[in-house]
Image (cartoon, rainbow, N blue to C red; front, top):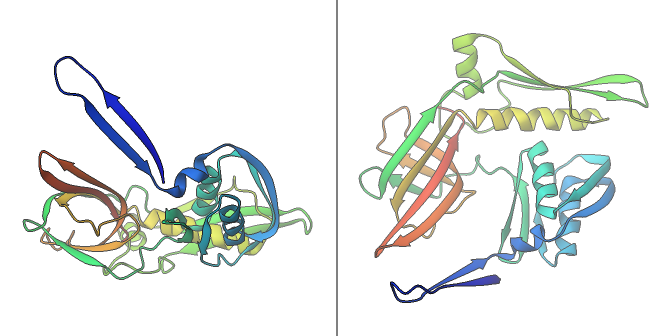
Length: 265
């Protein structure tokens, strides 16, 4: 673990010491790198980079082999997050492991937060502004001189996180057909187009409900898990995916602040 030590000296009060600790993900932020990867999956690339920075690889097979991928003057974290975003994966470091896995909003909930009990504040917002019922990806195969079209539509959301109606279905019922077309992503195989369409469709669905909240301090709350939030009405009670968590101890009180997303109601 990398650490930094901050001291504050003023004549008005006693000296203050602040210690900051960083997990081993700091290794992925050091320096910018340019390298190429040929005939590899994104999960293979993540495993290679984990070796380069001295971490163990904890990766899930991403399935699609890419002819050629360029890391162009990027930190390893920037590059891996870019690749993860194209396939609906997430990147994190847990202890000595570089984790590269599908976004885990389809997992079962790990714990429950009840409003007025351990959940002190909750501010959910449901919006259909970004919801579509189909994502279409358009590409071109220069060798075969053929257009490549990948599609994902209502029914491809995966888990509805305990809800009844996905964001895509809600949008279609309310406003009719809406298609999002992606044409600025280089790809040369059908598998790449299908994977990108599926990833973007699921990412958009997960934007149906977003929110933030504060609960009594919970050391078991961390980003990347699913929690059950109850006591906030039928529309907003249910499973949520934690996207960020901040633990704060101040004035002898320990609170946990978090942000969440959900893809159905």
